Length: 189
Image 1 (cartoon, one colour):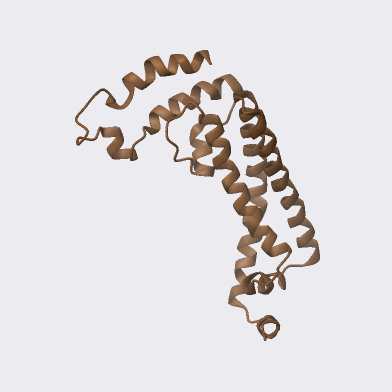
Image 2 (cartoon, helix red, strand yellow):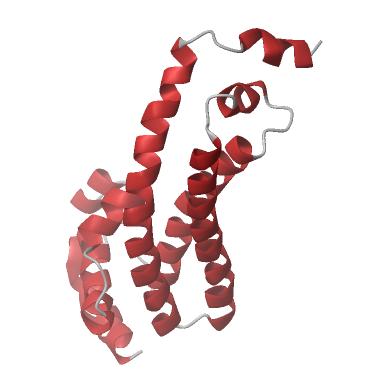
């Protein structure tokens, strides 16, 4: 907490020309970043990154499109952005592994071999673990837990993403083929 007090006293006064100004006139920072200073945010994050051995802000932003406002809860906010990406991919894999009534999912599932489904399920389990780990950290609510989660989830995501990328590149090809179209449409009557 000492670091945050240092942040509050020094950084917020000096960064982005945030002194009292005409409310109609935006600072350079507000103009460029719609109400928050990315470099102020990055500077705050870097204090935590150094303390907890976290990935660089740039790498996190490239993976999870952080787009955050400056907040004393920056690690919690980053954790939540990571979980947004994780949950999006869980929903996609849910549809592929268990195609209910979605025409797209049913069509795509015809093109996935059983061994691919097993591999996808292993990735799905890793993503679900991260999702559940997030809930545990939410209850703890401290910087150290958030930092551990960020470090773990980031490293896992990098490995998972590479495997998903190759799968989705291949899956895209099924939309150029006509194999099985009538089977899916017959299901819907």
